[in-house]
Amino acid sequence: MAKILIVGCGAIGLQFAELLAQQGHSITGLKRTPPESAHRLINFMTADLRVPAQLQTLDDDFEHIFFILSADERSEAAYREIYESGLNHLIAQFEGASIKPIWWMVSSTSVYGQTQGEWVDEDSPAEPTEITGQLIRQAEQTLTQLDPRNCVVRFSGIYGPGREYLLRQARQIPAIQQSPPYYTNRIHAQDCVGVLDFLLAKRLAGEALAQCYLASDDDPAPLWEVMNWLAEHMQLAPPSVKTNLARIDSNKRCRNQRLKQLGYQFLYPNYKLGYGELIE
Image (cartoon, rainbow, N blue to C red):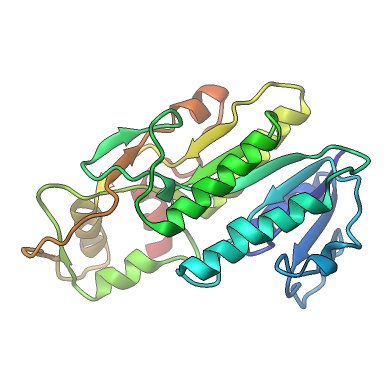
């Protein structure tokens, strides 16, 4: 069993921590505000990455560190606090540690700047135009250059219980771009946890991993198709056609073959399975 630090125990991080603890791993969760309810198998530590002094009591013998954080808001300053200064403070804390940990970063497909519906995978250019995506990409590079064993996992749009943005949008009967198609990519929250657990198990079994995995379901679909399907199954009026097309900063189709060839099987391989369950 491994000693693991999970930095950022939000919804995904906490579910992952609980799963690993149940498997017998020694889990420490680092969070600014730990959950009030008891988690018997998880040792929580209160700390803010923006304040290096609060990290000084961390153990230095973690074998794996999972960086699963998101910014408080969509602004350059908030993203710099997490993906630049916060990450650098944490890395500095483990310089000279008794064990050199393997780092895992939960990243985002927002690092892709493609706008024409192109297929993208781990080898595609990751050149985002937005500063938020650029800072995430910078954090990826910081960790992959730190140690070739380190691994980045790029999640597409996460949905599931508590993450029901498209269901709320469908109820508003929105105007949606129909042509040219605007593609959406998604992954169910349970698959986010499943992918992280799967990759860690592979590593612990001694298998060599790539430095990057794109985690998105099998069905990158046009938003027009998705919203019409939701409207039909929620018994709502269908969306209207959006005529004043705005500039699109990102429009791509995510390919998950590297992850599937490694052996991962998606619990929710398409939006109809995942959203159908939410609607029910």
